[in-house]
Amino acid sequence: MEKTIICCRRCPRLVRYREEVARTKRRQYQNWEYWGRPLPGFGDPKARLLVVGLAPAAHGANRTGRLFTGDRSGDWLYEALYRFGFANQPTATSRQDGLKLKDCYITAIVRCAPPQNKPTLQEQNNCRPYLLEEIPLLKKVRVVIALGQMAFAGYLRARKELDLSLPGPLPRFAHGSRTDFGDRMTLLGSYHPSQQNTFTGRLTAPMFHKVFATARHLLPH
Image (cartoon, rainbow, N blue to C red):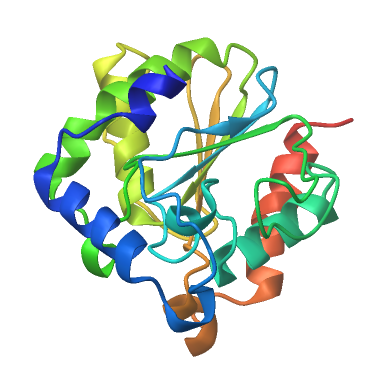
């Protein structure tokens, strides 16, 4: 599945954008060879924690070739994962940085960097088959953390398409929300650690840590 994802060209707008970004580069990364392709998920295949993000960042994962690596959102995510025992280090700068996830797997609902971090609904639909393949392979997952409203909704749509249990009415996204499903699965909602959210104080470190503390409580060592 990794090779299929990396070679994907289903969304012409996203293909154009990711490749243009990789060609022009940001000034401070002119010496980097940008990844410029779709991103597969990564982590521990026996993970009990699944973290679902929105999409790769143009000069983060689209540059480094690994989700949440090389950008401010990743700084927040990996610090939290390390703090609560799901990663061996608190930083992620490149695919060669030695990072290893423990009992955690990271994926996204869209695998290419979208313009303005806003994939269209059609682009989300085009990409969902990859999430639909991943979820059944991660047989030990018991807690899902959805980073942002779009990831939250995307995970719920995937559950519906996989005929997995869903409550009625469907839960609404909120930071700190918790939804328990009939198949011993728990979904936790968190604001995305984007610069827009963290710089404005909409998401603070204690707020973010509380979500991962809940996950740790539900998944004791």
